[in-house]
Length: 376
Image 1 (tube, one colour):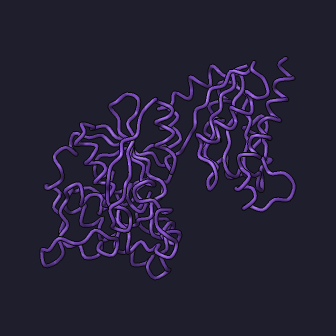
Image 2: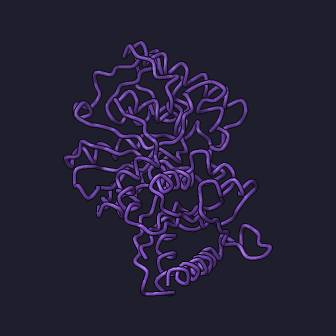
Image 3: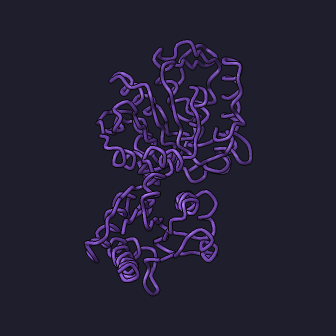
């Protein structure tokens, strides 16, 4: 029996690769008759780089860049198995978990390091990029990144502005002609499932600013600054991406990449295509996927639902194994053959996370027992 294992991460406890390996072990420990294929999945957030490298036989390249607080840090980018495509993961360069809770303030974070990593990859010969956009700590419209890519930002006195979020409002003039010449040769595929515009009630500052440490007053200022920034770029480039779908992703980095002719795509779809997921589903007799918590919202664009849609189209049964099944999980049976929670008895979140590997193994092995018996 061919078992395809294609999980998302269990955020806070296990990466998608770790989840996949644990699930595979549970099946192989139950019976050597199972043939397993592990394809860890991601949707453009944290873990996307690792997922794509594993799925395509790629590699990681170590480098140094400016971190979200302006200090140089060791980081990395990925190279796909085609040896032509570089993967930049925002979460590993300017990610929110990289900023201690007491220092989270989008006035004091920068996206500068992202541009530095892109330049590092360009200098190594890469021109095709996949950008995993999720998980940023910034809300600067990507101007810090653009600054390190060569775009000139000046204040009213003609002096170059700083690179942090609180410098955004000081920009008076933009000179796009100084952009690094290689950027015109680059292609950027942007993995993101965020559809928010740059500004307004559903924009980057209002929706995502508070979780990055912005106060109510700061949210208003940040939104005004992003609007000001977008007008300057519109004057400079003659195009307005302020209301474009996904412009508000990652604190406005989506907006910046649109100005680099980037194409925003569904993160789940992009990773699935790069991993040849559809071909793997066609060869499977049963599919396992999972995530940290599943509920009725899983059906609205979350990665397991995306996988289930393909599975159902190809008439392959699929089981969902998650950290917990939340309110409205009964709706999941519309897309999934079976749904499973790894939690046993009354358990708090801390214990679930601490024992995630053990609990996931045993619940998956229970499922393996059923499939082994029914297919003997």
